[in-house]
Image (cartoon, rainbow, N blue to C red):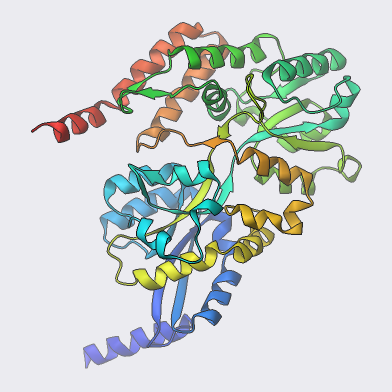
Length: 422
């Protein structure tokens, strides 16, 4: 009697969720705003695949990492889930992900040549692909074109020399009423992008040790610190900025570096009089052909290793990766498509602000693909802030950073040495 009652309850749950008893029920965890935007696409998928029901769980980004780890430990992982690009190495190390090379090769929907190379590479760990890029982001220049023109600069800078010249012109034109550029000093992304543009590897010896005192990183770090030393950027952290968009509208700063989320925010928050006063441009290059390097970001779709519903889950991944669905998702969420072919849609092709991201996405690189990266990034943020505030000279800040990173990587070295032992 109890077993029968439980079976009835299970059937009622499936009916309540819109699934039939005969359906394959795929669990899909989507994070943040993407979890709110994806249900219409899932509904379309279920119309196309009547034997598959998708149960979407929306998880805030702030809780997602811990919830995924807890689910893995508790053997309660979903069949398909969204992963931020820097989380992939950690879940590969745990053994939670199904490698996707064979599935991608056999899929008529997924051509490797139709992904931005740097973005696809962020999903490549030890020569295998572990996630399918769902949407992409990277960082580039946002700027007030009217204030730039008033300073006598006609176009967005394409090289570091032109960038520094433009910043100085803007600062001279505005006097002491603000700054040429906003660079929150506790954010690591800009100095890392500048260092990668100079060819810095960040880590060395198979990602066993920090390499922040290498010449390429030191040169980029010096350029970055010079922006503060010349008074072009305020010595402030992100938490000390009262209202980014209000300050941008008021002209408190002319340039800042941000990602695609700022496209929608600026369109919504700036007054109508400034609708045409701002623009975007790729990161300047250090001397080679533009654009300069920026960071590969975004999120991918991954499959749970050993899922009994892997075939149905993979069909969902294929569906969400179709260029048509990528455009639909862009319209719902504002997230940029991971498939270059989707960028031919008029919604993106006719938007010069979005097209700057299209250009930048051709020159993006992944941060070191190791589970420890996020902790390393925190140490890097501390080193940047100490050097900017004058609490440590650059050489000492980088020496301390290398020491901190070496300590963070001690367990990695031990594991690698142990695995290499006969």
